[in-house]
Amino acid sequence: MDSVSFSVERGTIHALVGENGAGKSTLIKILAGIYQRDEGEIIFDGKSVSFGTPHESQMSGFSVVHQEMKLSETLSVAENIFLGNLVYRHGLVDWKTMKEKALALLAMLGIDINVNQPVNELSVAKKQMVEICKALNHNCKLLVMDEPSASLTEREQTIMFATIRKLKAVGVTIVYISHRLEEIFDLADNVTVLRDGQKIDTLPVSEVDRKKLISLMVGRDLVSEYPKEQFTPGEVVLEVKNLNRANVLHNISFTARKGEILAFAGLVGSGRTEVARAILGIDKIDSGEIIYKGRRVRHKEFNRAISNGFGLVPEDRKSQGLILIHSVSENICMVNIGKIIKRGVVSSKLEQMYSDDFVKKLHIVTPSLSAEVQYLSGGNQQKVVIAKWLMQDSDIIFFDEPTRGIDVGAKVEIYRLINGLVREGKVIIMISSELPEILGISDRIIVMHDGAISGELMRQEATQEKIISMCV
Image 1 (spheres, rainbow, N blue to C red):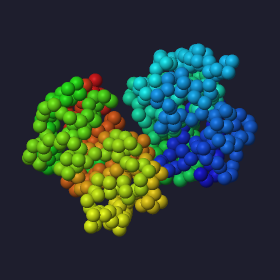
Image 2: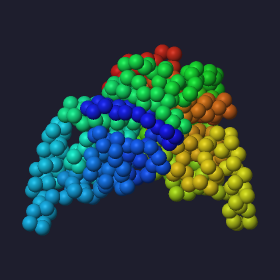
Image 3: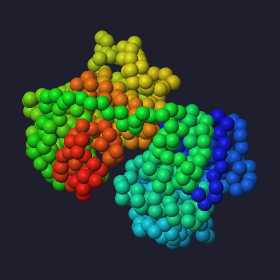
Image 4: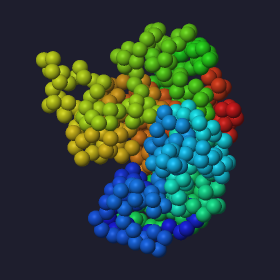
């Protein structure tokens, strides 16, 4: 952070935007008492405040709903809402009062959840609501929401937005962080833009459009949010015939050609990711054929798919694509151990040579090759996952939600990387919930509904309305 100053008006929704690494999380952690500022002043409710711990921040009326939720999965809804704030009577925990208060908080937000239910049985959206109730239970005056919609379905987002508006109506001030700019225009009253640790501007949302906001965030005008290159599709590399998995996939048939981006669209739960998992041998199939380069293959495990030239950039890069406490170089080389072994031992020299090459090729911003990958921005973490499959020289790469939680500038870089792979003759199969992304970057679109293919569109004929009608 470098001399950041801005004001948030009481009872408003104030958006905080910027690229990964702009300083949004650092600023919030200072407000939350997790990090300590070197200089400057925080004035809250007219008083100068200083928080040495998260508890001090919370007791003053600050609450943060983090992107990665801080709930105890095996405890009940009521226990989570009162975590760290238990009610006692005659020296004993007063469960009755706590459950009544938990019900009252949920009712205020119009949410129907059983307060005795363990949190691990709830949907992501309902967990989010429990986090909000937990914050309100600490006499929250200012609620910070960090990427709250990143893992929600459209219906769940609608419920959450209604909850946010209710909070605003009862006088709770909200600082809202999101990479999804459409949410900023839908919800926020004002917006502050950060870039490289500095405040660029604070503006009423009514005075800024999408193009200007992006320009302020990245420091330049983007020619296009979706830099699509035109390629002539070549031979069929992958053919899937009548793929079935009981209660999950029903007669899935399609082809994928060399030099094209094939996109899978559909609502969450429509079976898009399950198609990839079945082809890659992560999930078993009951029947059907997978024909790769003219020969039939059956991947009984993911390792077999990898050796056949398949790769996967998963939806959840942190839990499925990376080992966060390992270094950048270890993550890049993790599926390519054979290439860096010399006389039966991993060669540090070879590991560094390969990883340094991909860090330069993909413009991965990292303090060093030995830095733990957990400290990289979301966009750079995604590039590390891609580097892993480039080192493997995979022919077919599945990209599942390739730009989730990534800022607009990093998204453009990822799209250019995908274009480069297609130019090299790779087959790219992309799964995405973002229709503008699908329309902007793909050549052909397969739409799924309830585990089956409901339609197929070429990019030239596709519209959001056509895709949505097929989705439902």
